[in-house]
View 1 (cartoon, rainbow, N blue to C red):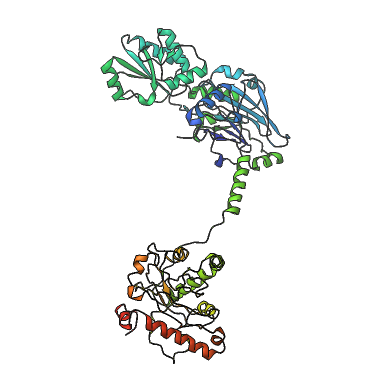
View 2: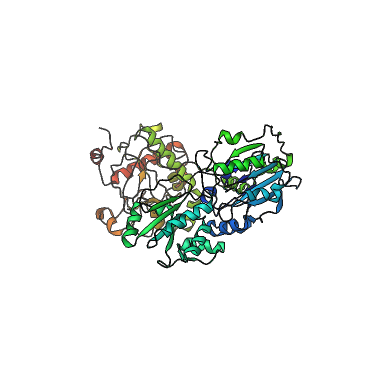
Length: 581
């Protein structure tokens, strides 16, 4: 729908214009009447800016659009009102409302201030009585006239509303046995309906929605919502068409009347178009402009003004407008809602900083993925230090421990291997063993897995304590199972890892599935339930740390003992492509 409103230049005023983002400097808003093409953008959420209108329009504004009462400021017609144009009360203007003779509540606005005198007609139907208004009868010079040019066509004439009303009466009289349907907009031409009701002594049937409006206007009681109660019925203009006319005439002889200034041609023998207009004709506009002699003229609808109408303007130039500094500041000052929006945006920026992206980084199963697994394993160990210390203090002697083994390395021990190719036990294993007198080894249960990508596992810091088990087959190790069995089936993932002080080798690991929480699964290896003994007897911790040679010899001996006791051979690894051929 087109917007028939304007922002008054060099002022903080806007009339029938409600797109706030397009007029950031407007602070005072005026509503000429309640037709929908003059309220585009005005909704119940309107706030922070006052709306000035007539008392009737204020009533309809509350009823139809549910605008909050605090923003509606009704002004009586004919009385001048002084309104501030800044925050400090230095600049003011006078506004006077004049009846526009258009629809209930429709008014013209006369603004007087530092910008001169501006008359905004809105939609109006000119009558000579308008020039007798006190505010226009004085020697007031209209600097700018905002003119309703809806019917500004020199080639088309419009009869007065009295003549058009008489024409409608004649049509109804010529069809005494017909019902009458009149097509109207939601607001307007109520005086025509009242006159027809009085003339033909009949009720005017209307919809419930229109009845609500009519009651608010306090019109004579000639309207009803009861179907068939009266001969004349009112509908929306859009409902009058060939299909509805055919349907109505099938039930009862019916004629339709369209009172409008639009140049329509009847498309049905029972349809009558009557040039009843609430807008000024071109001849009436000429009379109005000739009487006012404004300095400049601005059309409200579009930008076209006939040359004959412009020729009526006096040949004088309007003086330049200087906007007072206080008004400029007033127009630039943000409203309360804008300040709130700015504060809210600032709060969001301060408290809702963008987070770093999270997700899974996929790499090829080459050296990059191996390095990623190693780094992830080390990071998880560091993050869990504090929590693991608490777990150590609360754990009982039944807590299960594990040894990390690289199954990708060659299983046959070789004393000539040194440096980065040594197969070492993690540093935590060594440190705890030096503090233990003996290390009994529980069952070792390893199940081969074909997963190519290695996943780091978490291990308790005390891998070896007195009477500790490598993998406890009882269900008492719930804490261990919760930390290590993350894939839903109690998977125990084993990985070879060099300790922080045992070497620099970055070994490969392998996901190993081991059910450590179910006794029945553990009992399947019945021939190995006695466990694998790591050391027979006590261990002298001093002898383990006396020299690097003894330490290395001890580790190799321990490794050989473990490898000999494992329930599989080197051929098993070749089957799963774990040992290079």
